[in-house]
Image (cartoon, one colour):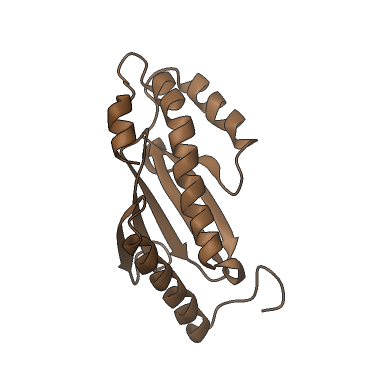
Length: 172
């Protein structure tokens, strides 16, 4: 690979990055932190057929945060389903999320399938190591816990209730 974004992955490189992801996921799951489930789908990306990893994390504000890692030709794409499409205060909800984008590192709020809100990002495959994978799940979890209550209170006014402090603390 000639630069940070690199060239197309050949099958051997793709297998090496996949093995790195599998090893990290196995060790992280065994460590007993917020990662509670991992599933690898060999051809999981519905558009490209790229391999995908499903990570389920225990959160504080949102009980579970789901992160998908998709190994593409030059990048590792990551996305976390943040919330369904807002039903109330739609403009204010999007304003809040877009304003928050300016402060986020490595991810951004984006509109996804069925107008749902996602946290998305990507990194060059050359940078995929334990520290980068830890950063991806850490930021996905931290930004969800930080932004979820406000976004849901706006987007589901009168219907959203924060998790009780005891429920938030018991997942830590």
